[in-house]
View (cartoon, rainbow, N blue to C red):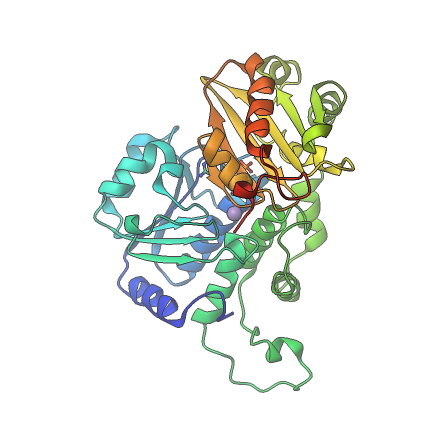
Length: 369
Ligand code: 5GP
Ligand code: MN
């Protein structure tokens, strides 16, 4: 839809693609469904145009997203750094997806920054660092990078000539283009995961996208089961343990958090992705509008933050957790002892809620603009 992407941006992107021989697609550390979905959709799109293309990620993706990587184009920097440096050197185009600053690609950052390739960012996070890229296609109103790609691909395609009945709502909305299933599926997955299964940031356009993708052959039940079903027994028991023993509710702050220690990870044979969605669990409690998940990692603590009101976790994360993200979904990291996390979180909340002026829910300076 033209309202999300400017015509000039589409033309520039098309012009860049016309000159490209070797494209490199990158996305962020700890890639999620939107990172993998947008990378694979772009990979299959460029492949369809006959452009030689690679996908490189700074770290592994969770097992449940593996079905999107069925042609195995994804390379992980921590596992294959030598081959990846060659790929970066030979790329004449880098397409960065689903992040707003190069810091988010971790150890790849300097290699990408030093590359002489044309750099394009396509993303939906606030405040993209424009100086790092030659072209930025960014919009925070869409649900996901996958949704932005859906509209971009739409705008890049010639409208169909054939006339259909005027009652055809897709025609009225200008969304009648075709996409092959290997592009439609990953786009659907990225949108579905970034909206937490259609719970957040879903506009009527997001539903239009879903509708069109289903018309194009996406099997929504299959994807639903692959992404949100089929969990391991370990994960389900881990979730029970987290809810019963590791979730803390701070009524005073309308907040809840979960502490996920290394000890618990070992006890439940944790695999990447097993804690997917845990950060949302406290939000199911009446009166809880802010939640956090703290995961103990090698040398640092990963922080995930969510809110369901106008408390900006993006700003909260920038202020206290060395991170950022969206207004209602953000992440970051801490370098303190794991047993100090609960106190740290409460103090951060205390600071943020001082001088509270909005119905005792959030401090004015943490409201989203
Ligand atoms: P998650 O909690 O799912 O890891 O991340 C939620 C959102 O915050 C995602 O959009 C993700 O891109 C962003 N995010 C996660 N970690 C960081 C971080 O360390 N820095 C920044 N700037 N954004 C992050
Ligand atoms: Mn995203």
